[in-house]
Image 1 (tube, helix red, strand yellow):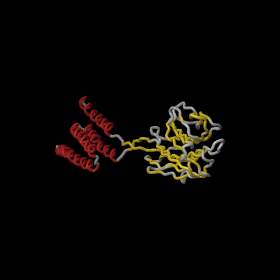
Image 2 (cartoon, helix red, strand yellow):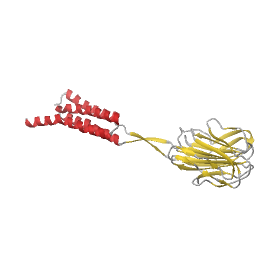
Image 3 (cartoon, helix red, strand yellow):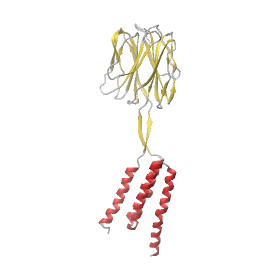
Amino acid sequence: METPSAYVRRYALVAIAALLLLLQVQPASAVTTSAPLVAATFSNHDTLATVSHVIAIAGGRAPNDLTLICDDFNVQTTITWPTGWTLIVQQNAGTDAANGILSCAYRFDVLGDPDSVTVTTSAPIDSTWVGYTIIRADPAQRLFTMGTQANNANPDSPAATVTVDTSLVIAAYGWGNSAFASLVSYPVGYGNNPVKDDGHVGSSASAAMSTRNVPPGTEDPGPATVSAAVAWAAATIVVSPVQVSIQRPTNADLLIIAILVIFVVIPTTLAYADDNLLWLSVAGIIGFLLAFQLFNSTGDIATTIAAVAVALVLMTIPFADLFETRRST
């Protein structure tokens, strides 16, 4: 009959093995991304010159959805976005100081956000805007932008640096003031999610955006085309995807599991069956700790495997002697 001390000793070994398994085997973290997706587009314009430009936003948004708006103001003015909106573009159009301004801002939605935003100006003017609701954008980022301006028929968003795979690059344009013109074409490769307002109701202010998902590198959208030479402003906006950390076993994790089995699980099982093999379990636990420390300090899988093989040979020498002794008796 098993004595209480033997019972405690054996199950203590099993507990030690389980504890080592929980503490030491941790699957490596891997990062995956899902490309930002334009869930909705919206656009409109002021019907009259005003200092309060009320922009209706697409409904159905969820917390952390990204709302991005680019508003083209017909003449120079002081522009104020509401609290909670981050201004990323304030680009004069053309080369004449009297021309309009392209102003872009964004906000990651929180629960209870209204379906509109009011942008104010220092004087009554006309404006035209375009906007996106974007899902799967990283809410921790600050959107990266580049801007430029000129007078011709080819609004040209500048090159921008993309650092995260599957980022959404947005080519945004505002034009007008110096002449009436309509958008003829978007840049090559930027036919996704087109949105524009160039209906010219009481104002020549016009705006447009389109997108493309790209890998890391330098991304230059290239020129769009409008129907006449005008003063324009253009911006390139980069939206990074949300990054999700997942746990995936690696070769290193599998090696640690193998070390656990060899040095802890098998010796503990043998010791549970035979008190004379208790030393084998103790030696196994020590061997595991040494092998794990070796791998943790060197990171070399081949060296660790070699050390495990040597330890196994050393562990089997006393086991062979015990087996020979029992056979002879």
